[in-house]
Image 1 (cartoon, helix red, strand yellow):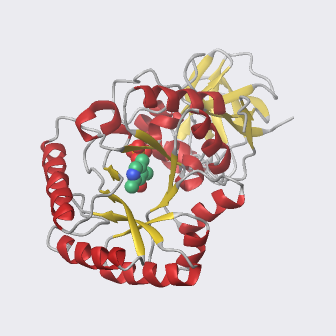
Image 2: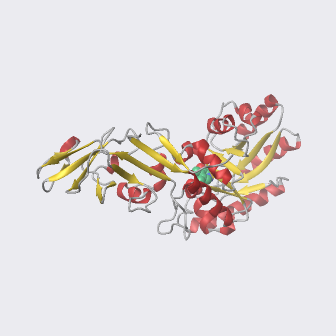
Length: 373
Ligand SMILES: *Cc1c(COP(=O)(O)O)cnc(C)c1O
C-alpha cells in the first residue's frame, strides 16, 4: 500500500530506446544522469540496454561508478569532470571520460598510470553552445596534447564529440552552423592523426530530426523516457513516469473559503476540497501553485492555492471524491490524466525538469515491466 508513489514503466523505456534505435544506423547511448531523469538510474540503464542501447551516459564520475557497482558493464561515458577527482577509479572501472583541456588530459594521463592502463578519452569540442568543450582556438592545442599522449600509449582517444544548443528547434540556424563546426573540428583532429571510433553530437532532438547529425553514436536522454524534446510531436514515444498519490482527506467548504498558505485560491462556490500528500519536498514545483493539473476521479483541476512542502489541495467541485482515491499529477496521458508536458506548460518549464525533480525524492518509486538481465 502506498500513500504517494512514482511508477516507472521500464517496458516503455525499453520500447522507446528500441524505437530510437530503429531510426538510426548509429549506436545509441542513453543518458541516465540525474537518477535517470528521475526514473531511477540503474533500472533505467538496464531497460535502455534491453532496448538495444550499447552505451550509457552520465554527467559525474560518481554516477558512472554507481553503474559499475550495480554490475553494469556496458560502455559508460562520463562528461562532467572538475579538476582533482579520483579519475583513476573511473579508468580502473573502464569508464570513458571526456576532456576538453590539456590540464584534464594531464590528469587522465596520471590516472592511467595509476590504474595501470591508459584512460579512454572523448575529446570535447565546443561548436557553439559555449558550455563545456574546447573553443575552436583551443582545439588544436588539445589535439596536439592528446595526439602526443596517445602516441606514447598514455591515453586512447575513442571519441570526439560536441553538443547542440538548439536542436529542439530543428530549423534554428545554429544547428547547421554547429554541424559545420563539428565537421571542421573532425578534420582538424584528423590532421593531428586523431580518427576516433566514435564521433557524436546528437541529443534526442537531433536524433529524431537530423539524421545527418547521427555520426557513429547518438546520445538520447529525454526521448528514452518517452518525452518529446520537440513541442507538438510525440514521435510515438511512451512516457514512462506516473506520479500519483492517494487523497488524504476531503472536506466540504462554503463559497469564499481561502485555501492553503496565503489563501491565494478562494472557492467560487460551495465545493469539496481534496488534500493530496505530495508537495515541493517530493518534487512538485512550487511554481505549480494554482496551475498544476491534477486528475481525481472524473475531474481534472488545477492545484487550489499554493503547493506546500508535503501537500497540495485540489478543488474537485461536486465530484464524489473520498479519502483513498487516487490523485494523478501526470502520467502517459492515455487514460485522461495530465502529462509531464501539461505540467511543463502550466509551470513555465520543460518536461525534462518535471520528471527529473522526482529523482532521489522521498516518494517511493515502483517499477512496472520485467526487464531480463
Ligand atoms: C543530457 C545530455 C544528453 C541527452 O540530452 P536529451 O536532450 O535529453 O536527449 C546528451 N548529451 C549530453 C552531453 C547531455 O548532457
